[in-house]
Image (cartoon, rainbow, N blue to C red; front, side):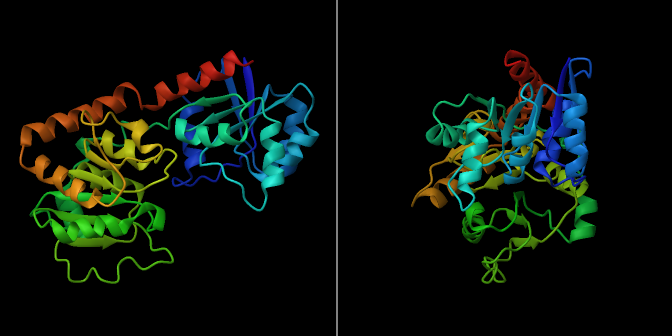
Length: 329
């Protein structure tokens, strides 16, 4: 049996991506094979580290992990699961020390792993894409009446959906621009505002609606009740909303950037659009083609769901994690 002590304190928040991965990955692995231990508090972790003498300390590359790396027993190995893109910041010297101390790194996409290998070519880096709960996100949760009453959403036209905070990197302005140019669908944008006001000129777009917040259950219902997930975000290591949308039977239209391209097979279970001057036109062309052919749209939707059932479910992801740890024991 392998013992893994997590250095990340569980937050209990559904929006915590690291907690979501840890919970779903390690609960799928038999405890007789991998005993995954979590606790809160710095001193509790120190005590457990010496009491259990785990095979691995599992971190996420946070700078406070330096204390555990410096204090750990020699036999205990330090591992990072990297959920973002690595770049030099103000705390680079500490982060450099952490990466130079790892036994290996698990990156949530090949794209994320490449940013590590570019800076640390000698580090062992493995890839394990994030998964999705295919029971929670599925088309059977469709409930247009409920959403119409609670959020005043009109389903008189097909729904094109965006879910994500209104960060510049996620490019909600592209989504809004497409809504302005395509009146054969209703465009729903769900996500909290950031510093930039992308919504300042949306009042005159009759087929556009912004909803600042939905809880997880309503997000699952919204995805199951929509038709297309249009996500022009760039530099995403492995955006959880993409497999969530696919698992719900949504057709995903994505910017051809970073981890987005690793989650789908272009033209089979989703579509990738090159980033550049023509991407709004390309997104519009995909929308027109999809809404003009019901059978084509249904086929892509079924393929998206199947990709999640076969490859992007948490059981499949947990098998990847288990194999990585056992092969590096």
